[in-house]
Length: 150
Length: 462
Image (cartoon, rainbow over the protein chains, first blue to last red):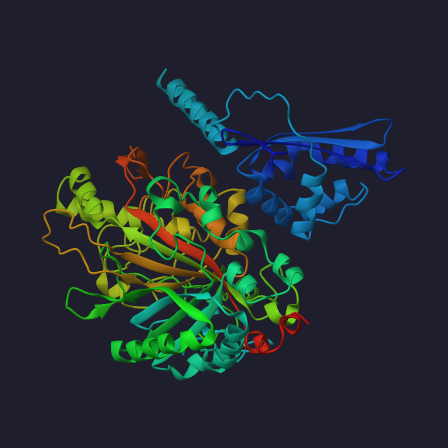
C-alpha cells in the first residue's frame, strides 16, 4: 500500500479519477457545497486535516489530495460507513466508481486510482486533528482564565 | 424474566455454538493439528460434523462441547479450490504472524519468539470443553487416538482451566486477580439472556447486536449482508475465531503497583483505574470509590452503564482497559459513531498456575490466557480493536497512551487518571504486562460445510 504515505500519525493520499463526460459542472457545485460552512460534514469526521479537490484537464479529471489521521485501512472503512452519501455525491460523477456501500470495492477503486507521493512535508506529523483542537481549546481557556485574573 | 435475544431466520442447528454463545465450561484443551493426508482428513471432518456443538445444542446446557476450526493454510491443505481460497479475506489468508506489525506483536511479542506450535503455520484448531477434567481428558484421549488413521497429526495442545478464587473454588478470574468475562455481546438469535449492558444502548434500554457481526451470511449492524467467501453454501453460517496465547507478567504488574502507589488501598485504586473494574468485577462506572462485591455478583446490574455520564473519565478513566475494549457511549466526537462495528465475542480460559500471593520474586512460570475472539470480519473487528483501541490513544484523545493492562508498552508508557478535583494523576514508565506467545486466525465452518468435505474437493465449492 505504498500509494499511501505515512508521516508520523498522518496518512497522505492523492488520487486522480476520470470524470464522466458532461458531469464536471455538477461535480464542481457538489464540491463547493460540501466544503462550504467550515467543512460541515467533513469536519464532523474529526480526522481530516486537509482535503483538496481540483477539477482539471479541461473538466475531464478530478484530483483529490488529503491528509488524515490514522491508517487508511482503519479509517477509509469508517468514512465509507459514516458518510457514504457524501462519497457517492463526489465519485459518483467519476468513471468506474463502484459505490461507497461495498467497502472492499471502494477501497480498491480509491487505492487503484491513487498516485505515489514524491515529496511531502508536514510541520506537525505527530499531532492529530483531535490533539490540535484540544490544544487550541486549552489555550483559549487559559487566556480566559488569565483575563479574569487581570 | 430476562428477555431472550430473538431468533431471526438463523439456523441454530448449523452454526457452531462458539460463534454466538459465551462458553462457561471450566476446563478446555485447545488442540492444534496439521493435515497430512487430505483425502482421509476430509472424511474425518465430514464424520465429526455431527459431533460439533451447535448454538441450539447449548440450549440443554451440555456437560461438554466439541468444536473445530481451520486456518487458511488448513483449508488449503484440505484441497479447497483455489477460487474459494482466494475469496477469503486477505488478513485471514496471511495469518496472524504476517500481521504482527499491525497488531503490535513486536519485541518480546514478535512471532519469532512465539511458542510451539505457533512458531510455524498450523492447520486445525479443535476445542474440547467440559465441566469436569475427567470428561475433558477422556474426550481429548479419544480425539488424539483417532488422528493417525485420519491423516492428521497433533502439533500441540494447551491445557486451560479456570483459576481458584480466594475461597479455593474455581472462578472466572484471570491471573492478575480480576473477575473476567462479565461483558459478552448479546447477539440476536443466540438464545442467551439479553443482560443489561451486553448489547447496544437504545431508547428502550439495550438491544442485541445483529447476528451478522458474528456469523457470515446474516445481516450485520448496517442492515445488509456483506459479501461472503465463495461458495456461500460453504462459508455461510461460519465465523472467524482469532486465537491469542497471551503470557501475563504477574510479577511485573504487582511490582509496578507497589512502586506507583502510596499504600495498599492506593494500589487497589490504581489497579482498578487501569482495569476499569475492581477485583470483584464491580465497574468503576457504577462504584468509583470502593469495590462493591454485591454489585459485582448481580448480572443485571454489574454491566448496566454507558459512560455517557462520565465522558471525562473521572469515574472510569477513558483509557482504562475495559473501557477501551468496549467504549459504549463514552467516546465523544465522530469516533463514537461506529463503536458497535468493532465488537468481539470472547471465549477462552487461563493456562498455568497462579503466582502465589506471597511470592517475593518472579518464578519464571508460564501463565496467561488463551483468548478465542469471535467475529465476522477480522480486519474490522479484532484487528481494529488491537491496533486502534488497545495500542493507540488518538481515537479517544489520549495521544500516545496505550491500554495499561494489555497494550504494547515498553517501559515508557503513561496512563492518565482524570480526577474530579484537578490535577489529573498520571502514571509513568509503564512496561508491558502481557506478551503474545502465539496465535492464528481460524475459520469456524457451519455443520453442513463440514459435512461437505465428504465430497471431492471440487464438490466442497459447488
